[in-house]
Image 1 (tube, helix red, strand yellow):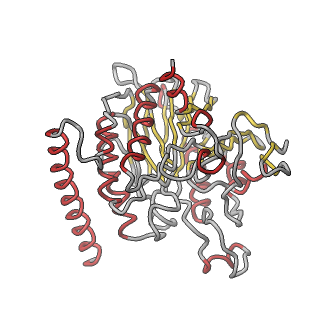
Image 2 (image 1 turned 120 degrees about the vertical axis):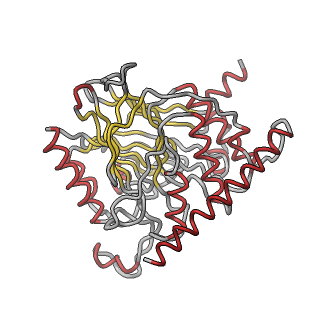
Length: 394
């Protein structure tokens, strides 16, 4: 208990120091007319309030119920728009951070989403905790509800102080819906957002999971892998059981539960959609229905198939949204479930320009827009940042 109190106090002190430093930087930013310091990439992106019709109806330790409401505050079945993006890879390159942020802010201002979801690898800089507060403050200015999961690069620990502090730097903001989740689960950031509609019905349940970093050798045997097997991590059995248990509770309460899942590292099933074309590229395999997009790198899934896809089939899973692979931008229907890559936002890390030599007019940075209709059907579409290049030329 003393150790926990020490870490809590240390976390509060670190955040207070970060906010004090940010306050000084913002003063300098105003005095310089927005020219310095360049590290304030979120202010340089000029976020303006967008606002929201969404209201929080109820919260528990690991879930939040929200609804899009009419002017009287009553939940409606109006189209609910979710914007997802991934892999911002914020680092020490202030100009690339600004480029990433400016395009993201413009997408939010034009789409006016009801919820924004980030599927990992957002802030990787050595000033991670400070940049997390900068980013969350920017989202508060925009005034839209948002949430996030961890990727494989944010922190090096499955569960520890700095990972918790990074999540807290987000969660302390009123419009952020991220939660730590049950202590019995792997990592931090395993939680649920339930979207409710008219009459209190359940429109969609969104499940969020920490998909880890690399396989943990001590767990290889539990998944039938040799001790020498290496690769990206996978969802754990306790996370899958959590999903099964919670969807069963929701079905008992509402009679139906169609769910979306959001995490960073793609499921093994993503590998089925494309195959090598023999010329260094990829072509659709025909095993699923490709709805849009292309594949330009191998799927960065785990060598372990933990069984989450089968659990989704049994529990009303409708779609899964991942990140991780920066130059794959597709959406496919596979055995009744949408497999989706959230479009990446980054200009800091590798992309179709660095890896394939493509001109910027073909890059896939942007956001993925999912619209929930009144009947529960989703419409999923990419919205590329390259559209702004065209507007600039015109």
